[in-house]
Image 1 (cartoon, rainbow, N blue to C red):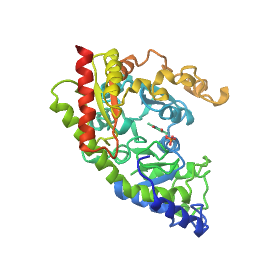
Image 2: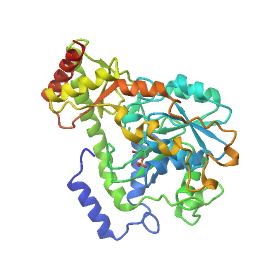
Image 3: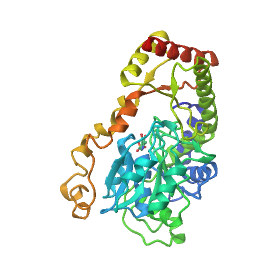
Image 4: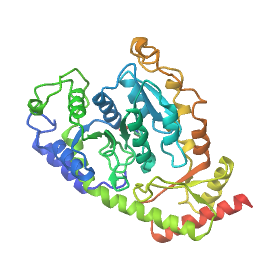
Length: 399
Ligand SMILES: Cc1ncc(COP(=O)(O)O)c(C=O)c1O
C-alpha cells in the first residue's frame, strides 16, 4: 500500500450512510459498477468484473476460457503460488516453465513446454515487470493457446503502450494490501471476450440468473462459486484508481533517478533486462550479479553503507518460488482424492512435471538477482545515495 487517506475514509462512510453495502439488489449503478466502468476506461478492456481476490480473478478467467480437467496450463516457476493454484482450482494441471533474466516467463521455454494438452498460458508480470507479450502471444497463436495475464502485481503497468491485463484474452488484478493500489482484499478480471465474460459472471455469483444483467446474457448458466465484491471495498478502490497513475509516475521517476545514478558510476552493477522498462511499474530497480554469493555480499555491505539500500533477492521470496510450493510438489491439489486434479482420471494423460528440478534455470536467475524496493517519497538525493552505496558495495565485493 502506497497511499491511503481521508478520501477513502469519506468514501467508505458515504456507503455506510447509504445502507447499500451489497452490489446487487439496489446497489446496481453503485461503487462496483463505477469501478468496472473506470477500469475499462483506464486499461482499455471492454469488460471488467470486480471480484473478491486476484486468485478469484484468475479462476474466473480460466473458467471463462473453458479450462478444466484434462487440460494443462503453463505457468512461470517464479510467481505467487496462486497462479498455479488457480489452475488446480478448475481441475486442470499446471506445467511450469522458466523465467528469464527479466523475471518473467521466458517465451522460448514456454514454447518448449507446450504439449498436446496445453490449453492456456499465464504470463505473470512479476513485481510490476511486464512480460514479453509480443513473443508470448506469437507462441500462443502458433499453438492455439489462450493467454490469461496475471497482472496482480502490475496494476497500471504497460507493454509497448498497451496496459497489462488488457493484452491477452483476459487479465487478472489483485487489490490485496501488498499491491500498488488496494482495498484490503479484492480482484478484477478484464477481457474483451463476451463469452468469457458471461461465463465469469455466472461463475462468480453461483450461476444466478435473476440479476439485472442476466437478460443480456447468451451463455447457458451453470453453478459457480461466490466471489462477488462489495460496495465498501469498491468505494475505497474507486479513490485508489484515481491515485494510480500518480503513484506510478512517482515510482518510475525515482527508479529512473536511481538507475541514472547507477549508470553514472560506470559498470559497477548490471541492471536487469526488461521487456519494457518504460511500462514497468517502477516498484523495483532490479540488478543482475555474477553469482548468488556476490549478490548476497553486496546486499549485506550496501545496507551497512545506506539503510535505504535494501537489496532483496527474489530467491528469498517464499511462496513466489516454485520449490517452496510443497502442496504442489507433494501433489496435494485438493481436499480429497476425488477433488485432487493430480489424481483425477481425466488428468492421467497430463504431464505432472512439478519437481524441484523442473525449473533450475529459474532458481539460478533468481539467486543472482537483487532488487531494491523504490520509496514513493524518496528525494533525488536519496536515490543517488542508494545508488552510490550499491555501486561501492559491488566494487568492494569484487575487489
Ligand atoms: C502474481 C500473483 N498472482 C496472484 C495473486 C493472488 O491475488 P490475491 O491474493 O488477491 O488472491 C497474487 C497475490 O499476491 C500475486 O502476487
